[in-house]
Image 1: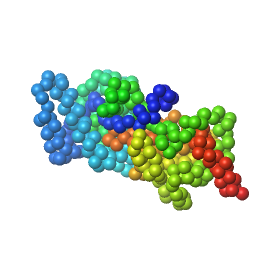
Image 2: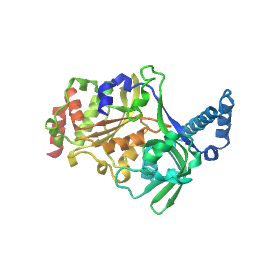
Image 3: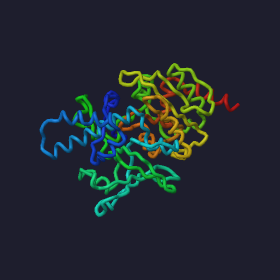
Image 4: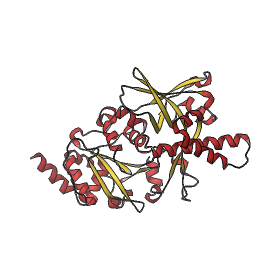
Amino acid sequence: MSDFRDTVTSDQRSAEMRHTIDPGLVNHQLVETILGEPGIREINRQIDLLPDLPDWMRKTRIGRIYTRVTLAFCEAQAVASLGEIIGQGHGRMFCSTEQFAPCASLRRQKRVRVSVVLEGDRDIAVELAFGTEHISSDTLRAALQQGERLSAIAAMPQLSGSRLTFQPLVIGTPWLESDDPTWSDRAEWFSCDFYEHFVEDFVEFSKVRDVPLPTQKEAEIMAIISETAVKTCLAEILGDETGKDWGGERSDHFSAHLTLGGRRTPAAFLLKGPARFAPMGLNHLGKNNDQIVRLAQEPAEILFVQHCHDILSPVRDTLRAFAVQPSRPRRYCLVDGRDTLRLLIAYDKLDRAKALSHAANS
């Protein structure tokens, strides 16, 4: 993550990028069952456009056509991520990028169950069950054996006790494509980082570049800055109005006034104050990460998580899993205590935040 922030510019991070899947497993029959006649017609139309090719290349191209049409279906149907299905307790199909546990049985069994590694304490386990004859790529076979982060589209869940089993339509490597020449030969090097942004990337927050990163000791002042004060100052920086919290909101603040890469970008914020002045882990986010589940339901193109202290890597991984779906990749940004302090200093809001916090405690 530090390399992505330090070696890639804000403009480069803001480039348009297409997120797809390089498939190593495609269950053609299941894809056709789920997509129905309209999907089958589109698949056949694209296959008819293929030139004469060697058999191995034709099979590869057909697998990509099935994947591309299935992703378009997921986008059109607003298919949820796996995390949303678990958090909401319902859903028949997911499209997301997840960490898979190693599956040694691929070497010797014709039908296998591959477990998904879920962050945090969960009362449910998730697995994908499939026949190994659907695997067409040695690369995917090795990735499943070793346990890697992969993109999957899966459906038809069956719950047995605390185990939820899906059948995969597609499994493959997350793949980025761009028409931007600065990314054409290196997008894949950042496939696990792209779509993440930092506070300085946004025009409305860009003054933070002039503020050095505070030390951990200096950032301890965030222990006295309330969540409400941060929300008020954030809204003032953006020229927004603030509403009263009522308990049923999906985010703490929503704004249509952020600019990223020259584009107006609606954003939803999850704010965490110093009630627990400690590094943010998944235990800060409710059972089954329900606060991120609600955040992801906002009609926003970038999801922010702000905290008064450090933010731990499981939170980043979880936020990314919700935001960056292959069928609908969105941007995300983590603003920890030190970056929050930089923002307040850059826009001359630190004294204002102190006063608001003091008044609330008086």
